[in-house]
Length: 502
Image 1 (cartoon, rainbow, N blue to C red):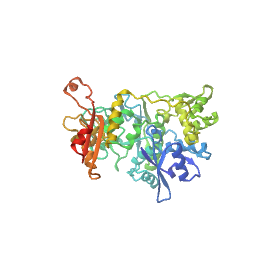
Image 2: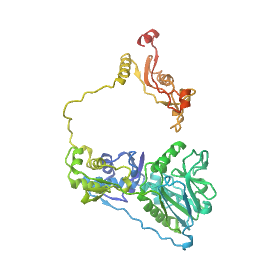
Image 3: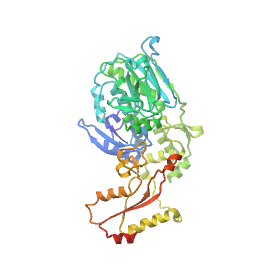
Image 4: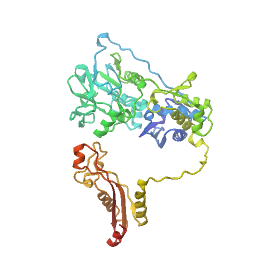
């Protein structure tokens, strides 16, 4: 997944005089590939950064800044670090109003952490120019000063959140549950969506669905120009359920992409107070409820034992303990010296598990290019060929020698090419990949048709599996038969010559 990172926004955290080109080079060498540097009209630049799937913690301005905070000193570049902490807020109303929201969670595994506050006297209008500019630079359309704050926090700290019009939540009640098959919800984009079973949703006191959790809010509870009271809602969802729901609905939002990779459990409350602070400044909001914070998961930060000799052995070069300590501390790890343990930062909880993970962090910050190049020593191992692959390799080699080109077509295809009775996928990426093939020939003919204008003669083959669901399979609930088949298609070749090859 690629994200956009304005240089000026990074400078809120990093104090460095390095030019943007050098920052992009160091980030690409030691963390994530910077695909492009996009100049802006105001003199700023925006980095387009490709984030690897295992690093959901880096899908934010703060995540990239943390990486550079560790990289720059390790490569001899001084850097200052500035992370403003936001203090908890105190409500400014009488005790009677503090528990105005009732929350019921049907299954604690749906929402490991649920936090919310209510704000009053909200003045909904355009956001300040500076906030709108930043959102536009990362490809987000500004809406109003309430919604923009939720998007701003998602981009800056990687924490998706949602703002409800509090007065549209009937009976001031929220019930978090799984959807029933066939339930409908109209989301903020105006689309009515029919839900499969098992999607995390919120209903209010009247039974209306008011949120498609982790994906998109509902139209019936959105913040508009008439909104005066806002429920600010920050949470951690079960990432597996969010991904399944997003894929099943074919609705991939920025929020869903972050939730499915895991959210910093300990970052929820600081993000909430940061958002409250911005709403007080930008929307004249007043906090009128105490914090609702429901923790359904006993989160503890992991500890990993450090073995300096083993880290050096993995790297193939000696790395001094001081270097190891400096890099890990720069990445947010905390040392427990007497026990040679490091505490993994909460935002890396799903990523760092064992010593080898620590070694990888140290080596990449030092730079893989700095490791010595050594040819392997010892005898070259003999390749043992599995007998089950012998005839497959033999057939492929023979056909190549006869002038055939090997094709690799996807196992999933369209209904037109799959034919009647083909097994369908439950969550296809698109209609073009909805059904499993029953034969290789339709796809090979499709390939031949696409290439018919390039040569007078064409010889294609594919050796792959097809998928046939028999009546017996259906009765016993078994997987389909998956025989290995050979398909050949030729053009401009004499029949007898073709027969001779076969």
